[in-house]
Amino acid sequence: MHALRCMGRNIRIARKRRRIPVADFAARLGVSSPTVLRLERGEPGVSVGCLAQALRALGELHRLEEFLDMADDNAGLMLEVAELPQRIRRRRAPNDHVAEGEAVAAPDGDPMAGAAL
Image (cartoon, rainbow, N blue to C red; front, side):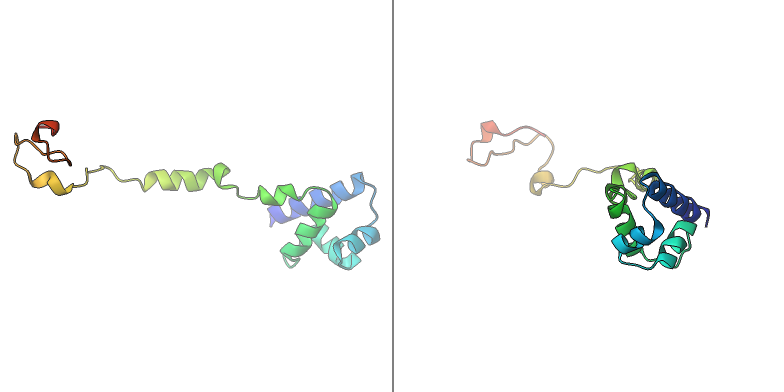
């Protein structure tokens, strides 16, 4: 997958910018050097835990927290909007059966405090 290869390339570049040798990076991640190389090639069999450890070692763990942030999920928001009801109906209250024009008594029993429907 192209996205995994790009992510792996970005991890490799970030590691090199920090001047971290593969063996040292692997030790920080708790994995072998070949696993780091597989991660940097973007191979899909590398675990998410390895990715998280790599981001932590690079000081970029916050990027994993931002992954598919609900506030930035435009596709999800559009689907949500598409599912909104066309019309919202008022819920029937217990006094909705009162005939039109009748006074409705207030909770304290004062008919003058009620509103005409």
